[in-house]
Every structure is written in C-alpha cells, then in structure tokens.
Image 1 (cartoon, rainbow, N blue to C red):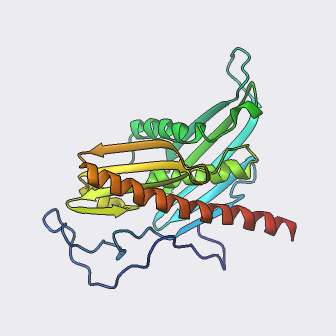
Image 2 (tube, rainbow, N blue to C red):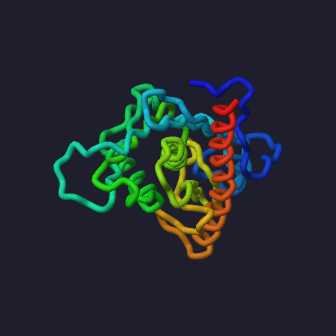
Length: 256
C-alpha cells in the first residue's frame, strides 16, 4: 500500500544533519550516524490516512518510513461473550503481522504481547461509559515491519478509533526511544533496535498531559531516563498535531 498522490508524510522533529554514514557496529556507537541518516533526535516522517477499510466502522493507515500499519475498528456492537450488564463498554484489541512483514516470521507470543500493550495504551483514553454492554474491536495489521512497530500501531489505532466516532478524552500518541551505547535515538528502526541496550516507550494524551502507558527495558541511569521521557513527550505532542490534521483533512475531503 502506498500513500495517496499529492500526500506528503510530515516530519515532526528537527532536520537531519548531512554526514557520511559509517557502518553500524556495537563498537562504534559513541558518535555514529544513524543508518537512515537521521539525527539522533529526529523522528521519521509520519503519514496517516483514514477510511482505509470500507467495511469497518473506522480505519486508518499509517506509514513511518518502512513501517506500515493498517488498523480497522468495528463497533460498538453487542458483545458475543455472555457477560453481566455493565455500565461501561468492552475494548478488544488484536495485533497481527502479514507473512511478508519481516524476513523472519513473527512468533505468536509477540502478537499476544502487542495486543495486550495496545489495549493498555488505548483503554484509558476511551470513554467506555458511552457504549455500555457493547464491544469495540480493534484489529491492527503490520504490513511491513521497519522498527518502532508498536508505537506506530498505537498511534494509528487512535486515529482509527476517532474515525469510527468512538468517544475519547484525547488522541493517544506513542513514541519510543532506544539507548545504544551512550546515544539516545528516538523512533528507532529495526537495525537500531537490534543493537539497543535499552528501550523506552511512552503513550500519552498530549492535550491532557496524561501518560497512558510507560514501558522501559534494559538498564537506564536516572538522567538518561528523564531525558528520554522528556524527548518522547515532546515528540508525542508534535505527532498528535499530525494525527489531528489527518482527521481534519478527512472531514474536509468528505464535505467537498
């Protein structure tokens, strides 16, 4: 799947510096240039398009560099599972990968973990009281895995939920950071993730200044984790502006 003609992915971080690219090895991580030429604090250009799946209540397609994701939302609809009456609705999330998304096929445990983390990131942003005793199903499919897959999935799912008319407190934007040696690199690609000593992902509602999920792996010093969180929160705020713009463009296009 490709972007629409005339649509240009939007960059939401500083421009990359122009330097020659040295090979990436574990012994050359102090002052190395990123494999795709970006600066350490520069995110990949982001592109969103709503209405990607006609049969769904709402849907969105997202493209961040080589990471391509499509999310479909169905509902609110009557729950198929027998359950007691509840004043709040139920959110179901499922994440999968196409067989051609990665050179090595993903294991089922990754799907389960991603599905659980997607649910945790979104649940706090959805006003569940607006659809009691019903269910909203979110299906995310990674078409191409190019790194930082989960943050892209979460951000794309948030746009799809808004496209479906699901009441939310705010959009959820997600950004990740890798610690590679002494470097902090934002929005890492697959190659960088394979060399990382630690990772951090923040999902937040920027307009409300609320974090819905924080995931940290590896060993981090207090100054580094503070810097990483600050950078991710700032990038999330800028990413949310791009997400809102894509929704406004969709509404404007439907009225023409």
